[in-house]
Length: 374
Image (tube, rainbow, N blue to C red; front, top):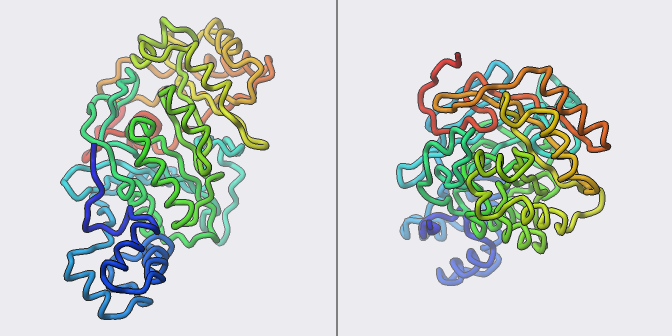
């Protein structure tokens, strides 16, 4: 739906940058210098690319070429250290991106579910996660998600997806690869409905910014054809599937996308997904009080997942204005987990991060002002 702005370097891959420098009459190796500066060094302007001749930098400016980093319009800091960024885009739209220091509450799917294993070094975090958006708004319309209330505005370009990461890394003064940073594509939007731009961003983040694909996880509500496509990608992140219900009737009520790709089709794609060595598929399950959190629901989830190399992340609903569901009690969450664990399914309860600033899972809504949670 959106096209990469022709004046932005951010979002151009090495091949595209090579075409740009050759068109300008420069040697092809200048493309690698541009690529390293834009993605590896995360420069703010072409003036900062000291490896380029002054004449070429002037030429880029004359042609209106900019790095194209998005702007941080607002920042909200949680009592737990989480930061919610309202990131402004070139056309006046905005998305939200979240920084979670010292772990990710299980969101990255890297086996460190609680984030408590991160060790402070000189009072600094040693590991962090960035939650990245892929669309302005979302079309999937999950009934328990605040982002769904926005509807869909447009897709983000590859450069806008990468730009969120670069903007946050710059703001947090992160040096790579010295620091461990995980990325979760679990922010605003459905990444698999913006598949080509999302995949381009993944490649640029791996090859340019320097974040390994093993440190990335993408979450999908269940765009079945793209799950099959994703499994064939030579460079890809880990996969998480938002399950959120244990049977078709309930899932269709909570996630209308189930009408198009029901649980039979979704689980067939999940079982066919080619996992790498030591990799597990992640299923995410948002628990809603008295809706999908019963022992019967837990037993149905066991049957859906049985025999798969998978794990389940349980998320007690993060509340917000306009959401007509309640957060379940800790007792019901623990009882649900107990059923899955007893059946041999690794199951983790995700610790909410940034709930007080509307930065937790399901709460992103381009909120410029905070409304106190009741």
